[in-house]
Amino acid sequence: MTTTAAYAFGPDAGQSTAASGKKSALAAPSAACKADARYPKRELRGVWIATTTNIDWPTKTGQSPARQKADYVKILDSAAKRNFNAVFVQVRPASDAFYKSSLEPWSQYLTGTAGKDPGWDPLPFLISEAHKRGMEFHAWFNPYRASYGDDTAKLPADHPARRHPDWTVEYGGRLYYNPGLPAVRDHVTKVITDVVSRYDIDGVHFDDYFYPYPVAGEKFDDAAAFRKHGKGKKLAEWRRSNVNTLVAEVDQAVHRTKKHVKFGISPFGIWRNKSNDPSGSATSGMSAYDSIYADSRAWIKSGTVDYVLPQLYWPRGHDLADYSTLVRWWADEVEGSDVQLYIGHGLYRVGTKDDKAWTRPGELSAQVAASRDGKVVEGAVYFSAKQLLSNPLGAMDRLAKSHYSRPALLPLMKDRGGQAPAAPAGAKAAGTRLSWTPSANARAYAVYQLPKSGKDCHTTDARNLVAVVSEPSYTTKAEGTYLITALDRLHNESKAVKVKVDAV
Image (cartoon, rainbow, N blue to C red; front, side, top):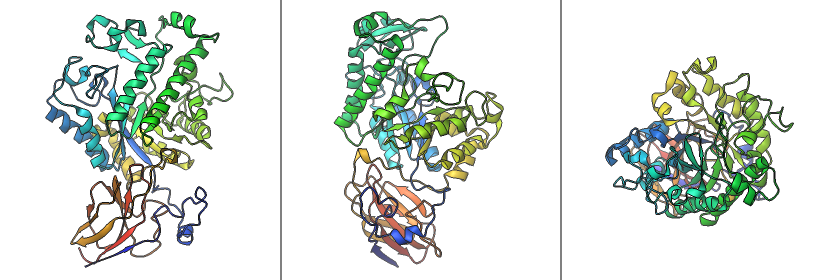
């Protein structure tokens, strides 16, 4: 037997009424519920899936589409099992494409031959499989890497670097697009806009590669561009300005094309050291500001990114770059801004001899606990998918048990818009199966199992959240009372519908 009723409030009611100025209908009950930090209701949990040199996927070149699909699904299932809700998939490693493009050639990491048609367009499949599992899909682009080699003659005839050799700079045995050229910025922006316009992605993502990392004895020869476009600036200042300009142009282009698509960057973990700048962190590592001309602090201040995801690949207590010190620094930088902060974790280092701390199975779990303590960090992303599957030292299982035992909704991003869908209608139970009529504009549905006794605290945290599903049905494992809400693609949440399951 089933009974249903619509709640007169949304599950987020009472959490934050300041923005709307309206009094929440759930103000009294939610005030009685103290949020349990172990079960954050909203938290981004993601994994990077690197395609360059076949790091994560495809596992090697020349595989059949069926094998490539199966391997990708294996990664997603591993992430879903641990209640992850986002994937960051590298779709443009080096001015190439993991999707059908008229602007750049097919990636060599699909077939083994740059420019060779793999016989299918992977991107729609990659996106839809993520969405089926309630995960956001962030398309990861490398903006300036043109080729892993330095011989343009070996590139496909239609490769932009071959058609425009004047765009490139040879450095460290590789080809890079010159960030100081307006034509390069225009091309990169055009490539990204093309993907945003044609595919149902949820985010555009850059990693930490801007000007190339320093190579001993090598000089990045952009002197001609500097003379033409420098406009009296110092070289380092001009280089940072070039990167900042690209970031601002991409930000504008992405949101002009589709307002809901997020744009974020995963910078190197150290902006500057305090020894270089009093605003810097109490660290002694490489400065991204000075070495690769990435001024992430400027992006936060100007609001040209929706989120930053610094790569904090050091353990707690590291002599040069202590994890906890860096988390506090980044949290201070985003606090009071509209830019969200997620932390990039070095899963690939677990079990290695890089540092004694990485031989401890609980290091990653302790890092997540430390970042949650400050109440500014809104999520975590792990590099990379290969180690998600191999689970070194059992660290990911430990992490999932300690911190991800419940699903989580995505953090709300008000600048990207969206609107809560209508509450699900026609909710009913037949045996162990809950079902309901799909809600217009719903990407997914949240299912809460209310406690038999005690307070219903589903509005304050995820202790009652049992699933986020993409289809309008859910198979229960226990009798009791359930709440179902509809989520749009940005996880704006509808009012709840109650369903009572009397027997299983």
